[in-house]
Image (cartoon, rainbow, N blue to C red; front, side, top):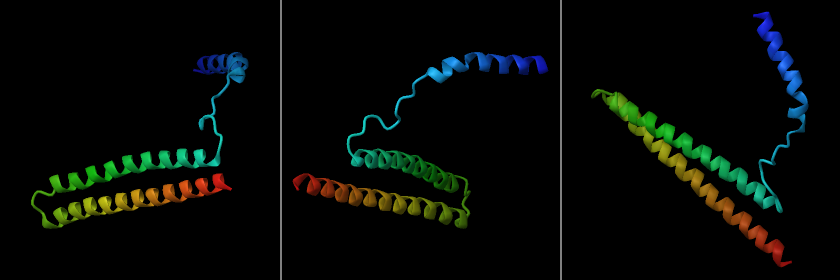
Length: 112
């Protein structure tokens, strides 16, 4: 086992000069204005919210399916789905407001 570990460590140090020369691309891409950074961060956040809302919908649906007629479980499943819809509505409304504010600010700075 020690021989395998020492071999892996040796290979890592042999490959280190090649790893150090590797160029990493900017994950944000070419950025000309700060609004582009905000837009990309917001887009990533919206993707995360979409995945999270899907998970909550599935969880609420599973509660409904597995309730077996239990009124408390049915109510809990319905409430979970309703709150997921309300949460998504709030997030998308805030996205629309934020997009409007950023576009208004960028237009007003371009005019002057």
